[in-house]
Length: 234
Image (cartoon, rainbow, N blue to C red; front, side, top):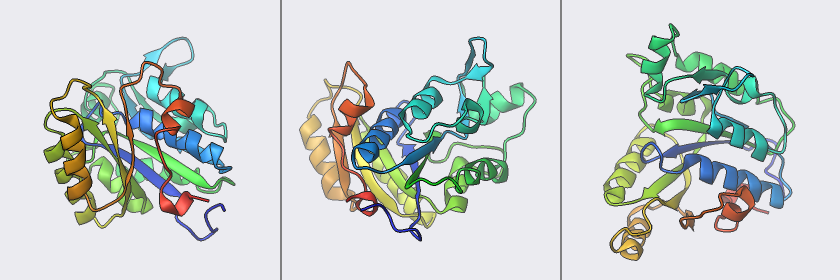
């Protein structure tokens, strides 16, 4: 059964750090939703580390979101703010003479809100408190949209502290964590099973899956390791 019409369709995918695996998990969730018969649209409102291959600045992560979503949007709607330098977005924006604001990014996201889809997914940049300017962070975008949050935990040494602090910050901001996903960054991490068990014990929200280190990051394969948040399950 698709989510009810009054349900909040927004999921915001954040990570414990940069390169935690947000896009891997986000595209996996989009594939899982498709397999469950749900329609989806996705946006990465701001992305740093973009390249111009003849069609303007584009970001690899945003292109993957565009391909994985069932409702196909033009690139400019999937990634409305594309920044060249692979650095903190607010610094990259300053270098390009741009100003980032939560209200503008929220506006881009709300443009997707009228689409006839069951799930709207927004992927952040870096972690939960990535600055947009001197006053705002990407967390303000998730708060304004009242998103449910998917926390991607990059499984490597130090991940327990990062995960607990991020979860604490999300809750303090008044948002619901729909679930967390462990993504294996370092398959040689000492005591990885024990670390995962500790995360399961200390994070009160549900674990939606543990993604192993994969050579093939095909979204359908990633989806096989995930379950959808309860609100989107059949």
